[in-house]
Amino acid sequence: MAKKVGIITSGGDAPGMNAAIRAVTRQGISLSYQIIGIKRGFKGLLDNDFTYLTLRSVSGIINTGGTMLHTGRCPETKTKAGMNKAIKTIKELDLDGLIIIGGDGSLSAGHALSKHGVKVINIAASIDNDIYGTDETIGYDTALNTAVDAIDKIRDTATSHDRIFVVEIMGREHGFLTADVGLAAGCEFIVVPEMKIDVNKLAKELKEGKTREKTSEIIAFAEGCGSSVEFGRQIEELTSLDVRVSTLGYIQRGGRPTARTRIIASKFGHAAMNLFHKGETNVLIGMTDGKISAMPIHQAMKYEKKFDDQTFKVLRTLSV
Ligand code: F6P
Image (cartoon, rainbow, N blue to C red; front, side, top):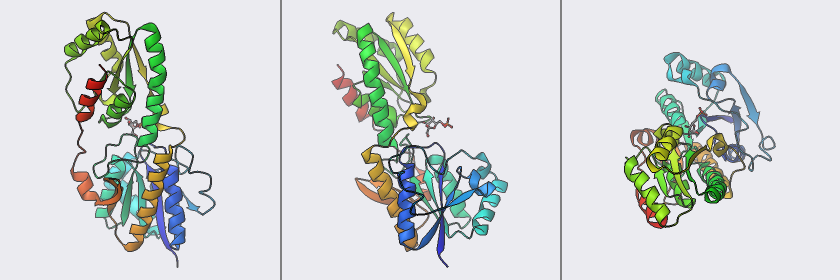
């Protein structure tokens, strides 16, 4: 009988999840596995909601955003009853293991399942790029390009009106996306949870920018730093300059994956299935120093990804 592997996308969707589903499915089938797509994240495991994936059912998805399996956040898996229910479904479906595509929440769920003896492989996917054990996550490059493109447009109106803009960028707990967006979009400042800022100093420097005939000044503000509207109000008060706030929001999570995202997703999915076949499970698939890597899930869970404040220094030097 063919071995069976379940595949789940869970947590916030990220562009490229579909490319990873395609890669796992096609590589899995080539290794004679049956691939079961669990629907709507871990909820599908609790509700027995799944579909059989075939070579053709994953056709035409490499270039699409979102996830064909749908996704969700499922707090129930954090409970003992939820975990038992998930394990029951895994047994009923006769799954040999699970491949989980998602971010830090998915990693925790993978860790919990592996402790119950389920063979798990996690694939790092999140627009936040905040997972230890990988330099880059699936979806990050696409979200980065979407946000930079949006700020390029904001720059036009900011310059035309000689305005300051606070642009809120996604990232609940971390500022990795904000920092890279800030550098790539030529922003004047970044505000991220990892770095303390002196708002009075920031306001003073914004005003000094005007003395150097700067027309627009843009602050890339991470979602995890609180209210961007309140921050914008504070900056306006301190500078007496014209300030506007723009929240990029969920457009950062959607859209056609970039070529880079598709390549990473395809390689991650392919590697995940190969490692599963070799019996090397309970690992997180990611990328380290440009190469596909596999780190034990418990190790990836143990550490926090380090924020590189060099990005801030470069950005400040260059946005003079
Ligand atoms: O997937 C990551 C992320 O987009 C964060 O940047 C953001 O804080 C969060 O998800 C939003 O989650 P939800 O989809 O539950 O609103």
